Image (cartoon, rainbow, N blue to C red; front, side, top):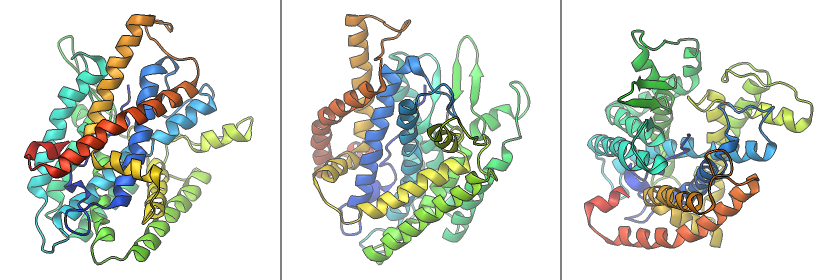
Length: 394
């Protein structure tokens, strides 16, 4: 089971440049990755009989399934980066002045960890068995880490983030076996595995923490891109330069199998298989090449969304303005829908019910996207009107 992303408006909610308005391009970006996240979670429910590995097995994974899964890779890095950026916006409100985001980040981080082990874990299995500590857990811990880092100068936060993102692949040869001293800490920080595996309790770390601390730190460092003093044209130029720079570096490192990914690409029997091998990156933990691809694309999309308006982008903006609500809602809609279909139709792939073609995943996702738009819009309007403190968490 691999939850793709958590939509945190937890760190400052991308408070916009003027007053309490919001930065539309950030909400649109969040909305886009929320829809991609939905597609991947529909895949987890109705195409689990065609499970994929990490990295994906190019030889046994169809191109349609490969690129469906690949599109979801954009989600987690985007959310974590924007969480760091939004923390900077919270610390530098548009009305002027500076405030410390430390306590804010720490409390939100604890809330996310609690959410992971309660509502989110239950939503996947409909019961409490194995505790899967996934993306919400890792964003919560990343926010707690950032709550400590914000006491440092901004340039040093950026340097730490850069060092972690670009350097953590050097740690790949370091491994610990269960029972060895250091195994628990290393499982949390870098190597995916069971933190605890007993008859009474099983805890699986699916998202190792260390690289995501680097991503959230770089997001915080990049906050001034959306400062009130930064004009739109300059911001777009910078975002385009960052995006193209990430992708150019990726081409160099990946093209020559130099660094940044443990699995080298190989030539396939067809050009499509070769492209799949080239784009096949490790997500758990996210390799440097994985982050260069996803953040590079995210920067270019943020630049493209700047000052653009149409009906589709307006709908994505709605999703991005209440992402936590959408996240929890869609998980339980999928749980209930799957249980009803399994009860009525029965299993057709072993103990599972599943569709027979990946395109059904896209069709189901499209229907759910439309259906979930209306409650999400209603909640977003309510959230932006109310002064109830707990509503802001969603």
